[in-house]
Image (cartoon, rainbow, N blue to C red; front, side, top):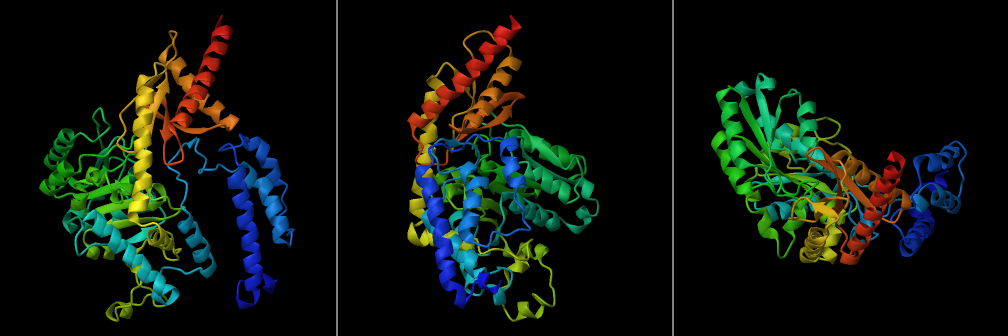
Length: 483
C-alpha cells in the first residue's frame, strides 16, 4: 500500500494518475452540452448504494470509470452558459492549477513550521485586499472557508469589542441588518449566544437597499430601551438582488451609536477589482470588518474567502495558545502563526489560488470578467422589462435578476406561484438550464445569477422561453383538470 503514498519514489505514478484525471475532466468540459443531466435523487442513489467501500478497485483508471457513473456524468457544471442558478462561478485556469499544487504539497496554514512561504503569501494577499478596500495601515485578516464563517468571526469580534459592562448580559446586545441580508447573520447571533431577539431586521427600499432612516430610528429605539447596539451588518451584494446598502450613511450611524460596522461583501467583492464599478463600494473603507468571497466574483474554486478587519489587534479575540502548536513564546519571537487569527486550526492553502490568478491574469483581468457579467445582467433586465410575460423586481446593481412569469390569462397569485415553482423544477429536470428560486414579499419568484462571461443575451432569451413554456404547460393542464 505504500505505493499509493505521494513521495519521491511515486512521482511518476502521481504524474500519470493526475494526468488521466485531468484528461477525463477536460473531456467532460469539452463535450457537456447541458449544465445538468436531469437525474433525480431516486435515479442516482442506487448507483452510489451499490458501491462497496470495503472492496477497493485497486486501480486509478477503474476508479475513474466508476466516478464517471456516480459523479462526473451527472454533476452540475457551472461552466455551462445556461447554468444561471446560485452564486457559483466558472473558475479560472490559474486557480485550478494552484488547486493541484496546494493539494499535492498539502501545507496547513495554521503555523509557520507547517507552511513557511504559504503563510507569507496569505499575508501578502490579505494586505493586498485590505488596501483595495482602504481599511488603513493597521488592517489585517485571515482566509476562511466561506462567507458564513467570515460573518461569524466578524460578529464574534464585534461582541468582544463591546464594553465589558455591556457584555455582562448578552441578551441586551443587538445586531441590525437588512431584511435582504444573508441568513448567516442570524445563525451567527444564535451561535454566539445573543438570544432570539438579537437580530433586528431593517426594511429595504424599492431597490432592496437598507432604509437608513429606519435604521436610525431602530438604533435610537435600542438606546432608549437600555439595549446595546453591538453591530450593524451592511450588505454589499445581497444574495437575491445584488443590492448594495448605503454604506456611507450606515458608517455615519455606526459612529454616532458606537456600533461595529461589518460589511458582508461576499458577492460584491468583485467590485474591488473592477476597472469601472469600484465606486459602488464607496463607504466600505469605513468598515470595522469586511467579508469577501473570492470564490464568487473573483472566479476562484471553492473555497477561497477571507474576513478583513480595520484593526488587526481585534483578531486577538480568536487567539488561543497551545504548547504543542503556537506557544505564547512564539508571539515574542515574532513567528507568524496564522492560527492566532483564525477560528480554524488545520486549514488549506486556499490563498494560493488567488495568488496564481493575480500573477497570471492580474486584478484588472479578473475585474473585467466581473464587469462583463454585470453588463450582461443590465441587458437581461432590459429583456425582462420589455417582456409582457414577466415581472422583474429591481434593476440590477451587480449580476442577479429576480423575476416571475405572469400568465396572459387571469390567474390567482397562488396559481402563479405554483406555475413558477413548477417551471423551475421542470427546467431542472430537463437539464436544459438551471435557475434559482426565491420569495419576494411572500410570493414565488425565479432568479438568474449571472457569473459566467460566456453566457449571452441569446442564452437568457432562450431560457425565458423555456420557463414560459413550462409554466404555460402547468397552467394549461390545471385548467383542463379544473374544468
